[in-house]
Image (cartoon, rainbow, N blue to C red; front, side, top):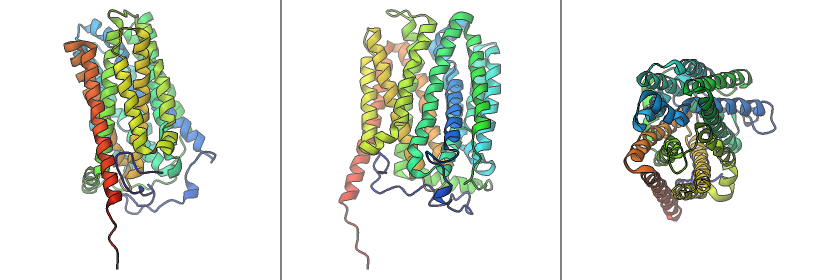
Length: 435
């Protein structure tokens, strides 16, 4: 497998080669004990994490397709209503690192199960929020609860799956994210059109209950996890080490910028489609999110893209696809706008799958913390993108939101080009002879 697509010049060390500093007594697990396609437990693991991914995105973005209805119900502006999304993603970004540290002590499986249970419980309360302030507050609590799932899932996969199958396994988890995002938005769109936005949020909560039950009974027990003590100093050293690694920092920035684009586009698109010249009803607006199926395919295909193009090549393809989609979305023709959303979605999910799997493969110690930092950057990008996208739309319409997305795309291109230059420079540097 080539190095991560942001400029590493040497092959990343196998994720099982070194123990985490937070768990100094961890011994590398024999390769035969790890899961891979065709081995017992791999299918159950994939299905369980797919269900967890569905629940995560369905809950996390449950209000996104409903923002015009929420604005109307509470007399809120687009910027104010966007906080029902940004509060959840922002809280997740803040809490993912401390909860990932708890997973080092109590276990990845236990942390994921607890996170889903709390998030689902809050999700069943959210439809009864009496004001926009209460809705935003409950969404923040829900986002904080969900923070225990993404990084723990990445660390679980890095520990339980053979390295050669890791990109594909993470791609399936990300595919679950795309299905959750799609099904949640379609469900809320049609339920809201028939019975109102509160009923729509209740329907998402029930969907998440089903996913949580499936996850609980399907996820295999961890065979390669060794619990460690909670050591704040060791955690601080691990985090500092990751933040001093230029490759990991580039990957974190790429994840944040990709999600800035995605958060801006999908927070605002509902407002655009219910206005002139489209004037679509809420149910049809929700159905627009069927384009998430493209994200399911592109994220699941990330492993094949990396094998064919290398990680940097896969990132260049993803970012070019995203930029093309942004430009097409400026059209006044609905069919062209939909094509633009297809390209944006495909590029985003492919880029996210490549970057997140690169983090898991690059970090040779403190995998949970490395994944947590990526998730923090990723969801911070979603929070910033959603809020700035709404502000831009209010100030300058859809063209202003697209301009924000193109700036983020330019950032991804710049980082990846810099990584390419670093890799080439390292290849040209002669290795000193040893005596």
